[in-house]
Length: 133
Image 1 (cartoon, rainbow, N blue to C red):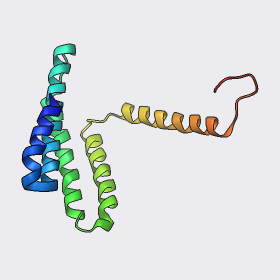
Image 2 (image 1 turned 180 degrees about the vertical axis):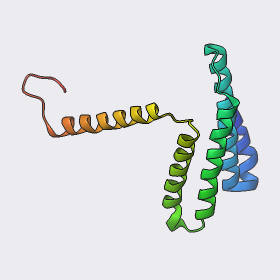
Image 3 (image 1 turned 90 degrees about the vertical axis):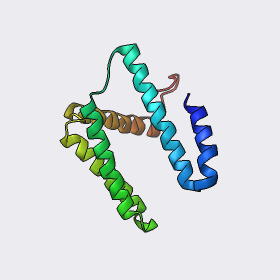
Image 4 (image 1 turned 90 degrees about the horizontal axis):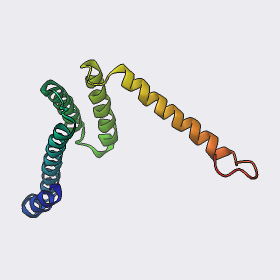
């Protein structure tokens, strides 16, 4: 469902608006895909995201966009503006309790486990006769 919308919107918007048209077409198709996924999840699992959560996430995204739009005049500051936008987005979601402390701890455990696994598997060879870690 999303692919035909993406192709059609790209065909209509790119010739007239160029790169901005491609960005708008992609945003439109992503929004339609997200909406279709929300309907699917609701029908399949009878679960939905409360409207207040959608508003909080949207406001956090708006703040992140404003930072990028403000600092993106010079390409030198572009990576810095993306880092600041991501940090502000995550902080806003933490303050609004959209990201819970348990989820942060889970993410830390996953990242730490990945680092431990990488260091264990990259430096040592398995003993003779043992296949894999």
